[in-house]
Image (cartoon, rainbow over all chains, first blue to last red; front, side, top):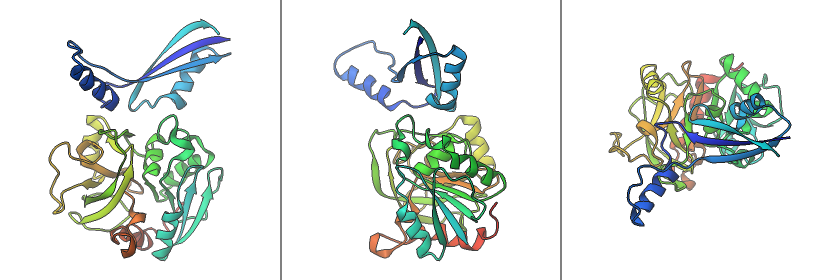
Length: 78
Length: 231
């Protein structure tokens, strides 16, 4: 059984409302020097599956290739 | 004229069926696990929150058995209209280009909006370009997005069907679409004009009692133009 961590983020150029909101509010709170914030999804998968299968899971369901990129990290044995 | 209205768990399709019937169209609701649409002249994928929209708007609905059939129906030239969540599902299914994102202002928007009919190849209605209609919107994820290449393709091939506009039909100031939609886009169609998706809800504007009848044109024209063209 392997543990995979999947990060789903918007592609460059796709507007990310929670990220933009966080940027504004952090500035209001007095945090200087915050260049950008992006808010994505973090998905943890425990599965008897190889990384190729996890990639297919992302392509078919977990991410929409029109607007999102994903990154898979093998986090070890579950 | 016999329209199929797809019903997913989480669809709230009854008002679209009512609207179509009130315009003289025969309607049958079809469950999401159906695999035969041959008896229909057109298909409506209605609004709602299919399967809770938990992963992304329409992401699970796209994988249901009926959507494979809807894709085949569209491929054969059959007319398909997706309203609200239905538009999101058609985009997720890649039957329409682009995607619907969460509203730019993060708020669910529920009010009547002014829309301008654009010059397009859409076969779902026959309103003249430049016509202005008042139709309610009711969505949290109606921010239309596509990349620049896709946008210019949409423009060049007459696939932008409806835009949010001022009451006189002129363009909104930049950034004033209710949901932040790119280029104020409220509805698009595919290249052949038989697949049409829109965020506003014409089925909620078919009776003077509930705020106007501008939505009727989206159904009455279907009777004139689409009968007999189904797959």
